[in-house]
Image (cartoon, rainbow, N blue to C red):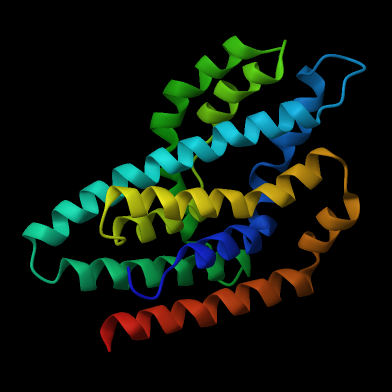
Length: 219
């Protein structure tokens, strides 16, 4: 997809850390409660996040595959998908800035599916080894999230399953630093992301980028 690249996806994941702290920060912090006592939680947290990123990567491949089919058989599908991607990013920026929270309605669409698979995650608790945190993270990677859904539209418009997977992989990598820092108790980073000026700054930059993508799609 022209105008979107892997580095952009990584930066959006990194900037979206303000959202990740709110959505997943509590989950990651709670991992300490189910890890063996007296052992560093870092290997468990890292494996959990690897599982989460794998789920994103698979989702990106699936959406990229269907986007390729649409582009092959539907006239102007590429332009429409590119436009949708820009609009979704703009909605995400509005959500992060608390200017408009309509994106929460989209998050509710995935609740039904997640409620069916979420109980399976309990089978892996408490963690006995770091590897047992991988399937737990994989399942929680399907948690309904506007940030993830917005980026998935990029995969949809990417042109192939491989590129769609790569976009979501790099996006997942971008979310990793914040969630790792949260699990390790880096309060200065958490407080920084929750600061209203930081939130508004990140949201404003994302909104500008979204407008640029929309312009590229219709120009």
